[in-house]
Image (cartoon, rainbow, N blue to C red):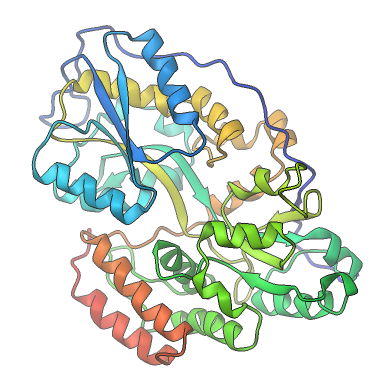
Length: 437
């Protein structure tokens, strides 16, 4: 059995907890506060809306029901947008541009903060009203723009490497791979096993959509490069960025990544891994409890673990996922909205969310809770992923940037361009975009 220095968190069965006690919190009726938000007055009480992508778990409405029961005169209506993030963003922008009060609290993808804040579509928030110091710092940073807080983190996420513990063990491999080279070597050993006949090595999310932006950025970051620097200036025409893209391109050519993986979104990869078709997969935390189900939907329950993403020379870096709560600048009843945001992003609600629709918590204490770790063994690895994660580009026109990344990286991966040409073209495209800082 080969020895490696990094230890992994092995899966031992996720036990879904019962509903935690949920309680509303907020300031006395009629109060308002400017906090550190400049001239914005958070006044007005009454009905509001919560605007987010479609919720397939039903957990969001369960949370809203608890708020509504405690606040019958300040009820929250759930406005469900399409599941596609690009469609969500467009509808939120359209509402902002018309200055409609139909949307109150917005569930923004963590990478949209700069764009929405720069255009003044959302208010600067009174940060002294929120428990930001109890949250992991990288997560809090996703809600900031030019020194101000414009979004309250409600959930986070980090990519992890899911791997077949049973097959690695049988192949004499003691630890999950820390580098891309180790992962390919492990695949070669595992595929010699009769149990691995017909299996593919590795997959992520490589269809031309936001998931490809995430996976491309992770490859670049895990090779020591950056897509944009701290000021939002592009840095993709570099040896490190090329090494990251070459890993993806080369892995498709040598069969490490199966050819059909260029059509994979999250659910495609999840189904392939749960069906026993993949030895390794890059995936978010939500897959863990699904893959552990023993109702026949997963062939690998109890046979997998999670580890940090591998990189070029050591552990790689995830892109930072998650959603933040922002307050529409054109909304009414903003005092109610501030209280609802605090309630929705509270530790009690995040404990509930963890058990029903496992988004990554934002509070450091939840990752260190022994009882939660026992129920959700992936939490230490997820925390490591988030703490070392790299944000996607923080730019004004994020939609244009992610479209360019998807176009050029997909062209290289599918053989339409060389890595050099794709990165050169991407550098030119990103130079045309204004930075967020």
